Image (cartoon, rainbow, N blue to C red; front, side):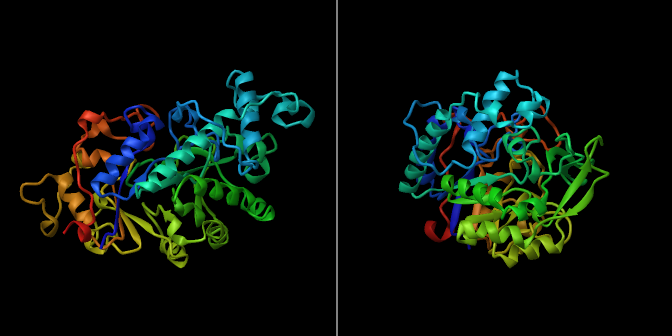
Length: 415
């Protein structure tokens, strides 16, 4: 039975589009009976506004913080902060050119040249200070924050520039293969993300420091971390960089248990990690998740078709799955066109959205997360992202006057 409920809503979807409205949203969540707020990655987005192809695995997107606040003075971010500040300063100096097109001395990080670059870390330190305030406020209201860890990052990123040895690149710093997924129900052509793939042997040789630092950073910001594309820990779809689509990729072996053990050593508890295991997932991936006692995901929009064994079907959802009505990659439930079978028929006097929310709150999962668009019963115009496309995504925002009152109290506490 569901014990924890929450809402999926990115910071950019708040009326202000930034942290200015965050405390008010937390107040609304607390009043609704919810205990969880899940958002998308808060790292800088790419040129298409996608937060899943960021120029940094560590840096915050400073535009999310519009307040002039104090500086966080910890040394906790020493691992990545100067590299990000250097990358940001040089990129601006070079007119926005990617690092692999910079002059040789900058591209190859010659110490004498880098020492002349003037950097400023105030933006990141201000964000850290403001974020710590937000997290403390959320805790005081009984709200846990769920953050998002995209498995991959952009080729043009501070991390790849600073740690070229950790990625699959040629001698010129260019990828021969890039990440994506084969054809599935999201895309008939598959998805070619263009993000770089890891050199797992190099990560192993450095004691997994980059990954350990990344998880530690996220857990300073969030209570729980959702690992996007968890399947990549088992195997990755490697697509030739010059291919137009993702059809001609091949599977590469991932680090499996070895990396997960490192992340759990940082997290201290499997309850701090959610594994996104959606799509066409082989049994080995589910076994990997279960072996480490991680919660997976179930999406009700996928639950009313296919085999009776469909793991997204309401009566098949397990206690170790977090249930969602939909995700940021799906159309909204109001526009999904769901026709539940007889045993899951639309509730009398209720809409499809209300019915699926009720199913989510009453299934066997321990946690239910509802996209705000489904609470508001909005159509396609409120969709956050269409996978495989680069235009028109990540733009949806709500307005306070359009937000209805809602109740997400778990059944056990609302009865």
